[in-house]
Image (cartoon, rainbow, N blue to C red; front, side):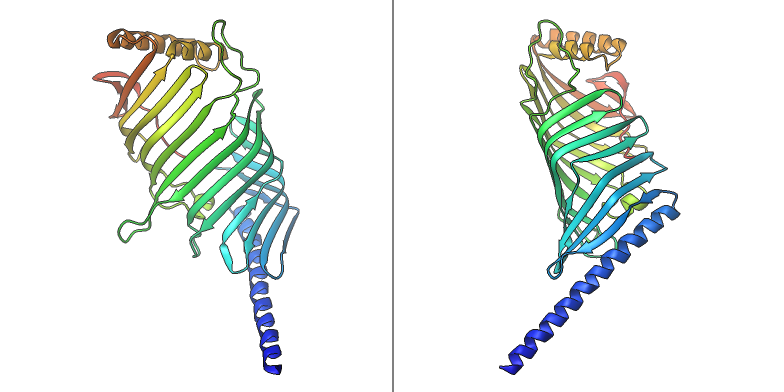
Length: 335
């Protein structure tokens, strides 16, 4: 039986060496990445970087982490951030965020509180760490802004899955699915008289296929973001009491970010939607006046005053309702 004991000892030594390789790889790799970001002009700091989990896991924990990109003006701070991986599956990660974190953008500062926020992340093996899929779950969320608004939800689910490769080139098309449970608009939001709505949306979800200039990988953080080239909205649904919004359609996007294609919107009780938007004070009255006049005209043509089906065509940098130009097309660019 000595040979079996020796074999077990040898196996333990090999496995221990395998874990140590992962340990040093994680610790030195993350430290180098932060140093490189600082060399690029970022704020990239943490108080401590620890790796644990022997013998079956590589668990990495950052404390008091701060990342800020000077080019986009986006900054993120958290008291800790964790990445967990099995020793034999280093490209399948579990990410865990703290109960409180902050995100700053050029226009405002956001505070995110949650009871639990984690993601399952699968990367393609290789130095570019291309994203294969990610599933994010947030339980009991409150998002507060320095501009004095807050949104809450009992749950948020976000899934981004890379689609199968077509031809020799790696796929840069992803399916994005989003669903919010009990999503409530800003707490200070007041409703106009005569409009009775529940506190939360009954349905808030979307299913989208998006193609980009290149796959999403580590360069999307280090350098610049891949830009969308095609959006295929399978379905978007928002139900808030008697107010119903549906959308579907597809557009291609040029190098400047302007779409070409068509989206169809269905609005049920659109007059109340306009009234709610007016009461919120977040949309310019002149814009709402023009929109209300246009929708009233369309409703008169259709003969249905409560429900509208509106096909919008985007072409040449212009948005058209039928043959009529109604304004510039939105520019779709990821900063």
